[in-house]
Image (cartoon, rainbow, N blue to C red; front, side):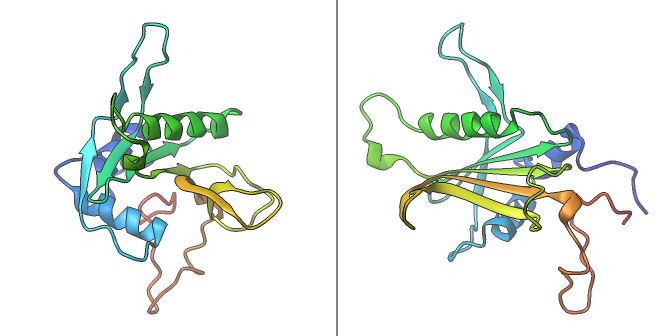
Length: 181
């Protein structure tokens, strides 16, 4: 029986994916989205408040911030609206997550990837049929990757088709789908 709680609502989303007491769902979500060669087995939920260094700095509060055993940082965001500046905001968040890893005197080689995953209840890229898109820093002229350290994923829920993701004859409706369970 459905509880009537929309998991896309900010509070519910943070409780589901950002609870230090229930990291298994965060791990499962990250593995499903990222499809890494070696699955994530452990995450720590970090403080999502990116404190200001100076009074004139912008205060940033992420939905969910996590780190895995390899030191990668994951910013998981839920967007029910589509602000015109969303790509800039996600870039800012991911860059902030990246640079906040180092303290004075630490070497740049210690930096680990910052991976942003934005679950959208709207369509951002109407020119693409896929609901899951990923972005990296790449060369315009050749298939060269400049860095794998800043990665962005978008999951556009309106494009998700549970029937096309049907495995083993069971229709799986994702946790965030607006379809009734």
